[in-house]
Length: 435
Ligand SMILES: CC(C)(COP(=O)(O)OP(=O)(O)OC[C@H]1O[C@@H](n2cnc3c(N)ncnc32)[C@H](O)[C@@H]1OP(=O)(O)O)[C@@H](O)C(=O)NCCC(=O)NCCS
Image 1 (spheres, helix red, strand yellow):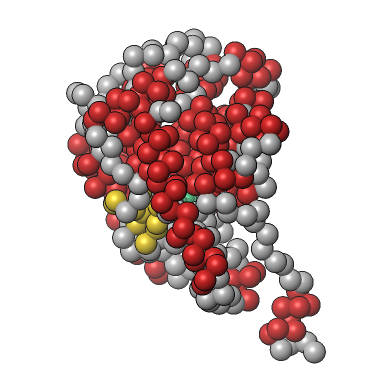
Image 2 (cartoon, rainbow, N blue to C red; image 1 turned 180 degrees about the vertical axis):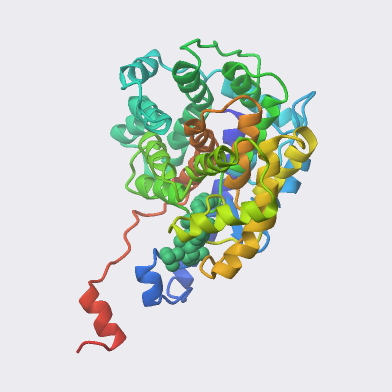
């Protein structure tokens, strides 16, 4: 058995009694109460999910397995010559809860490399889609097409014990995750680079290989590593993570679940916001005829957007109540590598002008920027200007966290998800409006 899986098995065996005890001895202890506002309002803030992969504090931001983003960037083993951690090491952390050593990462790299080959029919599927398909639709279709590869389905049909479901789920998770960068790069090169596909280089790590297949030189390999890490997980309640978890709760396999999460991520209020940010900024640039707007002019663009009933993309968050540390990590990267880039300067000006305006506007609970406000700028700078593609990058990252969650969902035997709904009549009765 591979060392990573062996370690995971031990962790699972040690963890199971905690979940069993909570359920058996403390199952009726109250965790939360639910208001009508929450029932109608998208279950905002209702404490009704559990995950140990990441936790989102409204003021501190995300912690992956207890580590903040700066701690992950500092502690996870780095690729020689680069500044960012191996994506493989981050996968190890999310699965096991432990920061791997360099040696652990090398072992994982070896294990993963043997699984990277994308079946050729996936490319046939991509080629069969209409040319103007959105890259997210292509990405989702490619993942779904691989469903027949599921080891879990095979084992399930053979009748393995429920206690062992996590094992083939782990196999599916790894097999799928290591193939996503090649599928993403293929979509990009086929759609936007004249179909000039660059073959993978098996000697490279996941991030390095992705940059290579995109045809972009250093430090884009570090950009890829940073992106996949930052977008990997944001606890369980966001649309993409929750969708993946929900689908898998029916014991649907990893391929169905990851394809589904990609569909949820494709919404403009979620992952697609990063392309919306670029589209919005380009709109401002066009109106300015290439000139950098003054602060006053920028404020007017922001107010015009709000007054026309639209949201300011890249700002606000359902949980966060401060600047997203994922925004900050990317801003630090921009300050180091592209401080004079005009789009970065636009984004930086927005950082200054939008929060006070959103406060004055009085609707958004969080006026601060989120991860999406900054991510498109870096891609644009390195030549990835086709912003329809940006959410695919988000998807490669998000799949890592969701896959790790699904492995643990099966390990801890989490059941099929089934909240209860009420009718409007019933809510009116509860509210005392109607007898
Ligand atoms: C992320 C987001 C969907 C969270 O939604 P939410 O939890 O409902 O946020 P809030 O509770 O703060 O929303 C309250 C109101 O403020 C508005 N609001 C929130 N963020 C806003 C923004 N960036 N610009 C304008 N209005 C905003 C909401 O649309 C809502 O208005 P309504 O009462 O007319 O429906 C929301 O902030 C948003 O649409 N942001 C822009 C898109 C984006 O960046 N998405 C990526 C998130 S990582």
